[in-house]
Image 1 (spheres, rainbow, N blue to C red):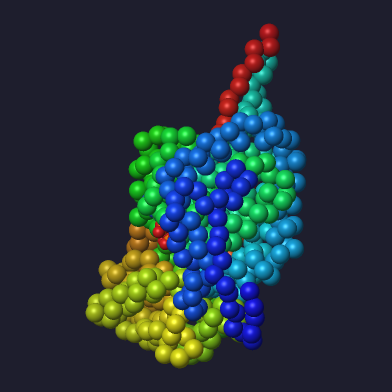
Image 2 (cartoon, helix red, strand yellow):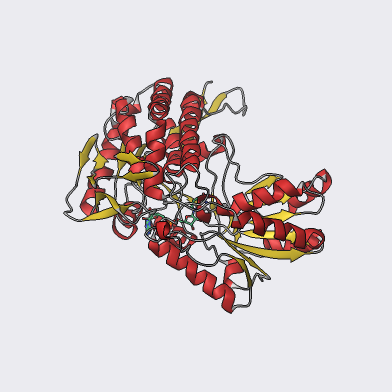
Length: 492
Ligand code: NAD
């Protein structure tokens, strides 16, 4: 890799995937290109794993799960391995962040935040590994009754492309802490940083076969993995549509699923809020990661009283956003992950205009010559949106904000809840009583008051309604990676 000013040129690198502690191209001779979304250049080639490769990975993971090296490892030692992975990631912090930006497109500042999050998640679960415990149950003096928390066995992890490292870590770290063996499949577009995790895990002393990373398509590798009869648990983060298919597949073998799916999240601004900060955060809530976020504040709900001035300021600030390649430290809005994704977003913009919404700003790709090769989009705001319009109810997954107006708190709540999704919500008010009312009434798994895009490895994250099942992060997440054995010992 060489650097000239803000331009980074990268040679096309051939990658392999990781099974049983070895880097392999598997049985398939097919590859797919990994691109830099800021330039459209191919930066890597990666094997497209076939069914046989998945079967092998599952067999390897099963053997590794049953082997004494993992099965009998003291939880404290397992935790130390996770801590060591975090430490290696920290030592390579800038490089990993740059790789994430080159592969996914997001501004380097955001990639750094994601790497920091991943490090923290490994540390959190490293610390938790020897605290995953059962309980004693006082039934009767003649019986000792207690629960054991046991690992599930072999877990499958399907990862999306919007936070390739952070979301992989979010599920891998607790699964490893609990003592499972893993097969993870990154998204086709963004496999590179997860392969780094495999490298650090091996260097940290994780036994071979415990963590396997398969690169391949959703249609073949992903589907084969989630339908394999020897998988004991599935964690899927991705679109609601794919999540539903996976749940149906999992039902056939009664395999538990943890689904983290889409969102169309309301960000509600009340007149008494700190409006200066609310404007900044409304912008941040939708334009971070080019809007490619399940938890994007993609529906801005503005009270009548502040509607005009809030929008005027938001428009002004939005038009000042610096668009550019993520590797440029000054960039605030990077490219979309792929040409297909940009096309999809442009389709939504067309439908918004046709359905009668008003395009306040953006709505097209930027025309600066330096940006024409990448998959850039201007930050876009629509007003006069209705929840019946496609742009008002579907997840766009791009830098497109839909603005709604309300005149009472009841109206805000009903607008907020008028969606199939229920992942995240923002509430902006200094009135504590009102905030409490909204927290209770909004149907979302996560609510942020006077804040947006906040999630820690310590705090549960999951959706209501079509946004998913179960919770990642926080100690609650361990429930998904373990099962309970209930024991009664007759001591008479
Ligand atoms: P996607 O559903 O297309 O793909 C996600 C992953 O699933 C990829 O690795 C893909 O290869 C794989 N896949 C596709 N079809 C499959 C199948 N039939 N069987 C098994 N695996 C399959 O989603 P995407 O476009 O990569 O990601 C964007 C979506 O993810 C958005 O809808 C977003 O809201 C959601 N998301 C949710 C969260 C959350 O925590 N709730 C976080 C990030 C992204």
